[in-house]
Length: 240
Ligand SMILES: Nc1ncnc2c1ncn2[C@@H]1O[C@H](COP(=O)(O)OP(=O)(O)O)[C@@H](O)[C@H]1O
Ligand SMILES: [Mg+2]
Image (cartoon, rainbow, N blue to C red; front, side):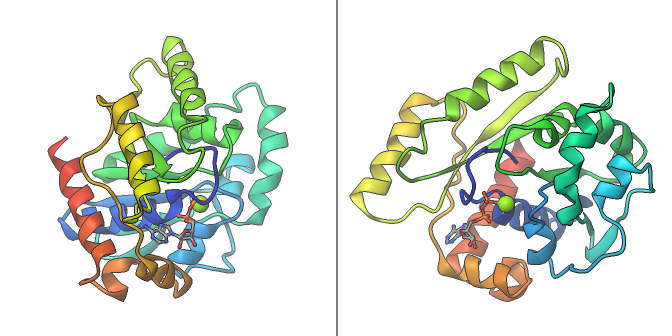
């Protein structure tokens, strides 16, 4: 789940798409690879002894925490901010996550990686470890700017580092009924008709409330529009 802009809905989408897939009986692993550790916090996991940082930089076993039926999490913490420098100093620094996941990915139907708001070495680790990428786009001013940067990066990765990487889709989030936001969503659809996912995530304050309560949307309020949207997204992903 990628976008180098922050606040677009990557973390919210990782948690709630993952939970929705788990409710459809799929075995799901969520990976927090953002030093801000928002995914871990939104999953109610804080003050952990080991994080993905220890697995990536100190060869510790990958810490996997169960957070629900069919749903596991690899947490992050602020230490991960040191990882960038350490990984850059390692000749294999771009491939660490891929190597780590080789031993676990076969146990899951889906592994969702919540990227930090940058296209640095942590996000590149995620893109190299992945079979496909979902680009999260907020229906907001300047949302379209920067998308080309992500597409170019994906093309470059496909040349060499991850030839099989596919684009699962562009997910438009935080849509509200204003003419302005609708027009941005329309612009994204016009520019990237091949890629825009059918499901659009509406702006829904309940999603923000759930994450500050350390819960996914289905546990917090399964009847809200946010829960309906993320369930629709899971169904679209399953059919794809
Ligand atoms: N569809 C939505 N409606 C309302 N608020 C949302 C929605 N999606 C995300 N948010 C809120 O917006 C903020 C940024 O979302 P987040 O998922 O953390 O973005 P990112 O991971 O891309 O930085 C959070 O406070 C989150 O609760
Ligand atoms: Mg985030």
